Amino acid sequence: PQLSAERVWSETKKLLLAENPAKVWQLMVAQGVLAHFMPEAHDVARLEKMVVLEKQYTEGTALRRLAALLEPNPAIADKVTVRLHLSNREAETLWLLVQLPSLLHSKLDPVPLRRLIYTHGNEAVRDGLLLLAARDGVAINAAWQLAQDWQAPNFPLRGEDMIALGIKPGPEMGAVLKAVETWWIEADFHPTKAECLTA
Image 1: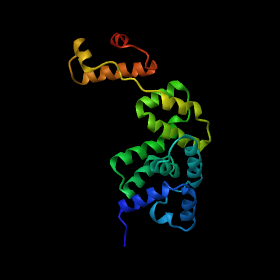
Image 2: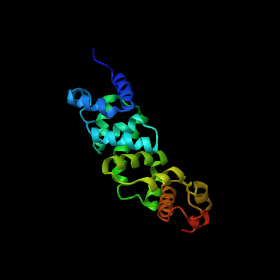
Image 3: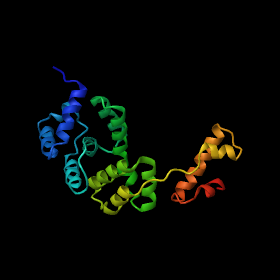
Image 4: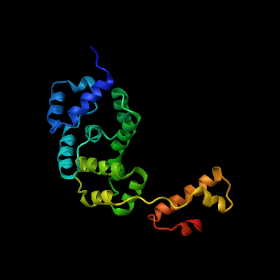
């Protein structure tokens, strides 16, 4: 009988969270099993490196390990998402994870890294750093520490601040807020509310 996609994903998660999933995965590749249910998830060497890195840095997660097996291509993440009937949240996470290593590739210095944390969140950036290290062998200690410790500040301006300046709610207000937020991010989040109001 045909297993449901949900059941396949449930069993796949168990496999991925095993102590040494790379061995089982390699066996599935060799026996042609993988070709039947997820041919895209074939980068066993990267999965192996990921498991080693996780021992050093954090707990293993099924989605991060799945992302390690896939090529860094959102179209492939989409295919896998459909095939495994991932939840919306899982699908969004996987889609981001396959792209983050490339986004992080030349952005391990504090300023660009803080921007990525502000946009995507600490957890996603930490996952991306592990995937990058597993893919390219780069050193991530300093970047990991920053992604652990730095908390993104809240953008200081709100709609009511714009109204106080005489800007009516609507597309113009949205555009002004977006422009000032972009400037604030580029200034590495340092400008105060007063400075943002005069920007």
